Image (cartoon, rainbow, N blue to C red; front, side, top):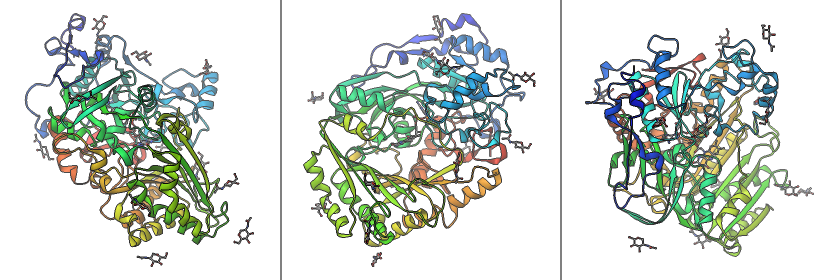
Length: 639
Ligand SMILES: Cc1cc2nc3c(=O)[nH]c(=O)nc-3n(C[C@H](O)[C@H](O)[C@H](O)COP(=O)(O)OP(=O)(O)OC[C@H]3O[C@@H](n4cnc5c(N)ncnc54)[C@H](O)[C@@H]3O)c2cc1C
Ligand SMILES: *[C@@H]1O[C@H](CO)[C@@H](O)[C@H](O)[C@H]1NC(C)=O
Ligand SMILES: *[C@@H]1O[C@H](CO)[C@@H](O)[C@H](O)[C@H]1NC(C)=O
Ligand SMILES: *[C@@H]1O[C@H](CO)[C@@H](O)[C@H](O)[C@H]1NC(C)=O
Ligand SMILES: *[C@@H]1O[C@H](CO)[C@@H](O)[C@H](O)[C@H]1NC(C)=O
Ligand SMILES: *[C@@H]1O[C@H](CO)[C@@H](O)[C@H](O)[C@H]1NC(C)=O
Ligand SMILES: *[C@@H]1O[C@H](CO)[C@@H](O)[C@H](O)[C@H]1NC(C)=O
Ligand SMILES: *[C@@H]1O[C@H](CO)[C@@H](O)[C@H](O)[C@H]1NC(C)=O
Ligand SMILES: *[C@@H]1O[C@H](CO)[C@@H](O)[C@H](O)[C@H]1NC(C)=O
Ligand SMILES: *[C@@H]1O[C@H](CO)[C@@H](O)[C@H](O)[C@H]1NC(C)=O
Ligand SMILES: *[C@@H]1O[C@H](CO)[C@@H](O)[C@H](O)[C@H]1NC(C)=O
Ligand SMILES: *[C@@H]1O[C@H](CO)[C@@H](O)[C@H](O)[C@H]1NC(C)=O
Ligand SMILES: *[C@@H]1O[C@H](CO)[C@@H](O)[C@H](O)[C@H]1NC(C)=O
């Protein structure tokens, strides 16, 4: 309960001015608007005082709508009043399709609209709660006919957050964090909603929506321990497209992923972040020079090579929604460069080759990853078990490999051709004529967009899962390792699985993270030459029990991802593009960083304010989901 009402809302902000230290960029204006602890003392948005709580005094479950412990309407109303209208109570967009729901907003024309745009053009990142992968919400409100009738032909709030703070100042975020902690409400963070494991969702939650914090500032020469040079200062919302554009306008390059609508400072950078610049400059997390974050106690903090160094280490690779709400980051920038891109395709049918020859060619390609990355080349590849029907086992599958594209950043056309000619000769020696394209660009930006289309992002299929594996150097750069890896690929492809993977070698030498002890990026990345995702689809009429049987078989059965684990012993899986059912996921996603990450999590978040399924500390919690599916559709409780 608020102990004081509107009177304090006018006094509750303190304006922070000036820079923190000479090596720091100024805070953004939105970060200077902070909560004043004195003014909010005694209210539901008071700061935490005193030492960490004893485990035994912590509630077993988060509060839940309809239960006695859920804050009363007038408590939410007071929060909304304080937040000046930025507290939203959004409804699922597809609710207009259902008559007779609690939303009472049935509208056939609006439903026709959302049904048409749902899979292709509906912009999820501009919506406070809609995610790219609604499967993790629980599919409780999708347009009729867009998939299985799993939702019993109705519409409920399911795994969607109940309230959302449309944050435009640090104070909004501090208020949300303090309220969630004091009122025992589940807190989630959403920027774009690209999360592929449901981590920007949560039933019965208050969400911090960061999508408005999109400031970008270019710092011509930024200096901090371990780095001196150009940098970007980016707000929490900045997406790859805006950063790439700002970089190009200033003759610079930025590390981003291949999807230009992914948010940079959220899940991408905090989870690791692979990039077309990965063979040259390492991971997204390696780019961070300093950051600002609201921690679970409501404090606004700087984490850098000299301040809160444990937090600085953990946030760079330890995963989003775990240690705090990042409000901005300072990232390395690189001088722009001539960039050449090439694409290569070969397939059994298209190239008129036998299956044996096809797999020899594919092995030849993967066998060159060490050489290619050693020359600074990154790339993306696809393996299609059968053209036109990429998933579903088919004994007559016609496998095809597509490299789309290979990036030669800093290379002219002649230099890229020279770099890959030995491999092309090897393919020709096998009798494989590839379809090949080449294009040189004066800078990185047009090269990137010549290959990677701007994305508004559709919706992930409801009947699809994916697992991933980092392919270690030993698994590709030795004949026996390569044989074992290709045997695993072939066994998976022949069951109808499609692959999408990346070639990069983000070693500590290429990444050069600042700070006394590097960062929390999964150590297996440092020895990897590829991150490879394998997709699996089940028939859409499967019951929840059949889905779980299928998914468990793919995740842990001997004919699923275990084939790749066996071929890459000691490696890991990329936490941001992975399976929620990954076995021993603390080891797979965090490696031997896990104990330290968990200790830092406990230090900064003793109440468990932040939670992300599969994240650090998630093993102490369980979402009691409908039908026990791996979704966010249920109450969050300690185990
Ligand atoms: C089409 C597509 C292509 C992709 N390509 C790549 C790629 O090339 N390289 C790559 O590495 N990854 C890639 N990804 C994966 C991507 O990095 C993750 O989905 C990532 O989590 C998205 O981050 P986001 O902040 O945009 O999404 P969101 O769903 O908004 O957030 C993701 C996670 O980060 C948390 N979070 C968001 N903002 C903050 C914040 N300010 N502070 C703390 N936590 C926060 C959220 O709570 C959530 O847990 C791709 C994903 C998709 C859907
Ligand atoms: C809470 O329990 C964990 C183990 O489950 C323990 O490591 C930690 O120290 C405990 N914290 C407190 C404050 O008792
Ligand atoms: C709400 O608006 C008032 C009047 O503009 C302003 O003084 C106050 O700081 C705002 N509160 C927050 C939390 O932004
Ligand atoms: C909604 O359902 C009610 C009760 O079944 C019905 O009377 C009403 O006509 C329906 N409205 C629309 C717009 O279909
Ligand atoms: C349908 O969508 C278009 C474009 O988003 C919008 O202009 C229009 O108002 C919508 N119509 C309805 C009935 O919602
Ligand atoms: C749909 O209804 C069935 C039968 O009542 C129930 O078992 C199932 O849990 C419901 N599904 C959802 C998603 O609510
Ligand atoms: C969120 O806030 C921004 C201003 O910060 C505003 O432009 C936008 O319309 C708001 N969005 C919603 C859905 O209220
Ligand atoms: C950047 O600043 C550092 C430290 O102040 C200085 O040594 C360096 O020469 C500067 N570089 C440029 C290009 O100005
Ligand atoms: C190569 O290009 C030709 C002509 O465009 C096309 O028919 C064939 O399918 C392509 N092959 C592959 C493997 O892409
Ligand atoms: C495919 O290759 C076989 C032998 O290698 C040859 O006989 C046949 O003509 C080729 N077909 C095409 C369409 O090139
Ligand atoms: C790549 O292979 C070529 C030819 O085999 C060799 O000359 C070159 O040194 C290799 N480069 C690296 C970085 O492995
Ligand atoms: C790898 O497999 C090839 C046949 O595909 C075989 O000739 C070769 O001996 C194998 N090498 C090793 C080290 O297992
Ligand atoms: C997955 O669902 C889609 C439609 O949503 C369907 O076209 C496809 O055939 C399904 N996959 C399998 C393997 O059944």
